Length: 123
Image (cartoon, rainbow, N blue to C red; front, side, top):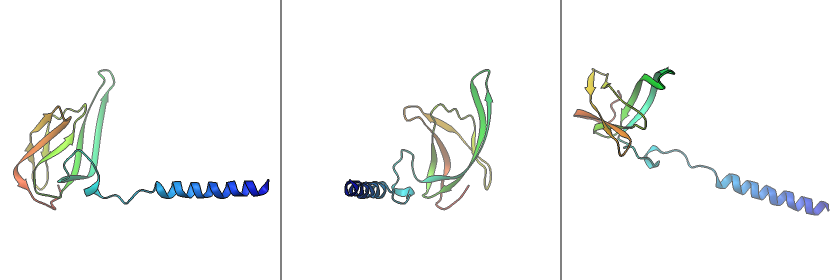
């Protein structure tokens, strides 16, 4: 009976080792990761301040997002499921108001710039 148990342990070990090595992920690469948002602008840091209103079941708040421009762009596109943006601006190096435009079919907002933003600028 002992040889059978030993064989089962060895088989289990090989199965476990095979599962562990086959499920290892490749290193994260932003450029090759699937997604629905454009990859010309990426967020680097979020500062979120939320104020829930439990009587009216709504939440208001402010989000400051540090971004990095990877490729020249005239817009930032963000997800917008159950979101309403009332005001948006670039605040560095100077304040530039942006007009958020809802794209309801895609559940996204588009924030457009008047000028082309260049690569490698961080705001």
